[in-house]
Length: 225
Ligand SMILES: *[C@@H]1O[C@H](CO)[C@@H](O)[C@H](O)[C@H]1NC(C)=O
Ligand SMILES: *[C@@H]1O[C@H](CO)[C@@H](O)[C@H](O)[C@H]1NC(C)=O
Image (cartoon, rainbow, N blue to C red; front, side, top):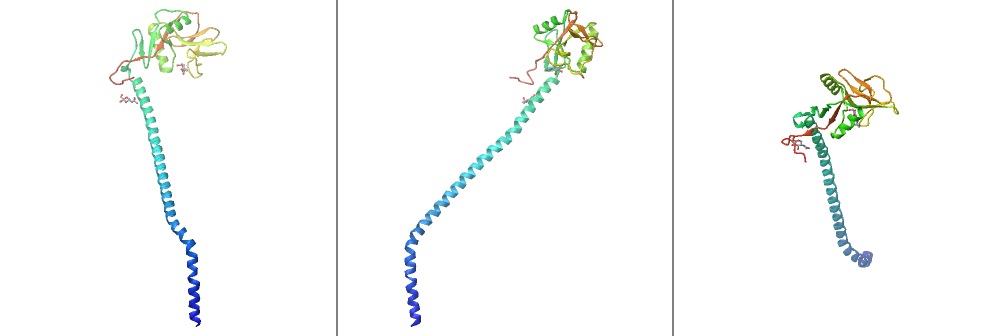
């Protein structure tokens, strides 16, 4: 009696239970399945897009990383080519009456005049007054002055306002540069003789030296555009 009652009670409590629970539970269950599928789809889609974006980003990064060194390499190449051109005198040439020395064309004037005339004459030749770069160039010029037995104006003058020697390119003479003998005063210009660079009155008459860039002649090795 008791058991059957319990059984009945169980049955009674069981059957209405699921029946009551399932009607509100089933429709959400039926919905949840596709919904979770949709979520999975969305998630995988987002994942794919993310993967694509990272791939694009990485490829851009790789391209930038590859290009940078190649650009640097290129400029190094160009630099190398420039120095190669400068080192090889066979490719450099000067016009008549000009002397090639290293990578400069040098012209010694025929007549002598005041410093300003020399400055103007170099300008009309598409050149500038000589600027001495280093000791080697100075020795070369001194030797030339010795061989010609004369003195030459350089592109170097004294400015009373700054109390400094200035090259005609606008730079001041560095303290460890040329040594100039003689007094530097108003209207002093620098001239070079066989054994020294000295201060002379700009109104004195000396020969002068002009310099300009050489031309590149050989087209077989480098095709400059
Ligand atoms: C440098 O010169 C060589 C030939 O002399 C040429 O093949 C090369 O392309 C040049 N490089 C650059 C960057 O101009
Ligand atoms: C001007 O020429 C002097 C002598 O060669 C050189 O030391 C200096 O660097 C040059 N300055 C410029 C701006 O080219």
